[in-house]
Structures are given as structure tokens and as C-alpha cells.
Image (cartoon, rainbow, N blue to C red; front, side):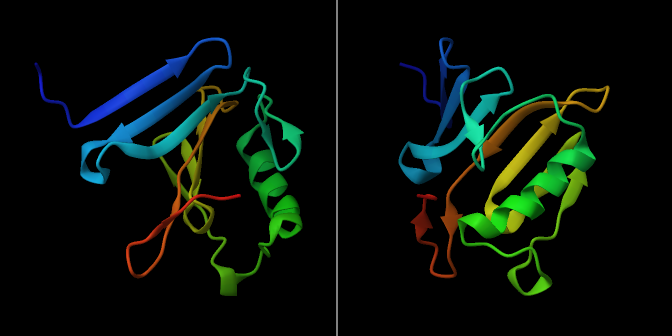
Amino acid sequence: MVATDYLELFFSDSLLLLFFDREDSFRLASIEAKTESPVSLFGLPLRKYLKERVEALVRERAGLYGFEAKASLDLETHWYEGSLTFPALAIDFHFEPGGKLDAVSWGPFVDANDRTFWPT
């Protein structure tokens, strides 16, 4: 038997990839959905949006789900290696080299006491 630090499960019918990490006793660590999957984001289907449109959609729609796009709730973004991330929402958007959205991944919120909470 080979020891591994993580496990990935890919569901080809829904284009979802689930990640499990040894550090968390192989509990679900994150979910990734390709833009062709039937998953929606803030009630909208995933599409090949450009980075600016993705950022605008998140800022517009986050308030409908209990978040407000203001500095006090830290809806800042980070751009790195073709990905746009919203740390306060535990969500990353991955883009193709041409700038179109390719996939979305999200994970649980972790509080100051290191407790894990998945969005509902």
C-alpha cells in the first residue's frame, strides 16, 4: 500500500473534482468545478467569463448571500499564476492563458480557532 498526502476524486459526468487531504484526516478539503459543469455560482451558470466580469459578478452577488462588498468584510482579491482568489469567501477562479474562466474551486471557511465551516 502506498501512503499519500491527498486524494482526488473526479466525477466525469458533472466535471467536479473533490480533494481530500491527509492533514485533515482525509475530510473534504476543496471542490473544483469546470465551467462546463452544471454547477452555478451565485445563481448563475459558470461560463467562460473574463477576469473583470468574474470579479464584478462576485462583488455584485455576494451581498445576496450574506456578504457585502466592502473593506470591513475583506472582499479583497489576489491575482497569482492565472488565478483570482477571494480569501474571505474561500473561492478561487482559474483562467485559461487567453483570460477566460476555466474552473472555480472553493473550500471551507476556517475560523480563528481552526474550526472548519462549509458554506451552506
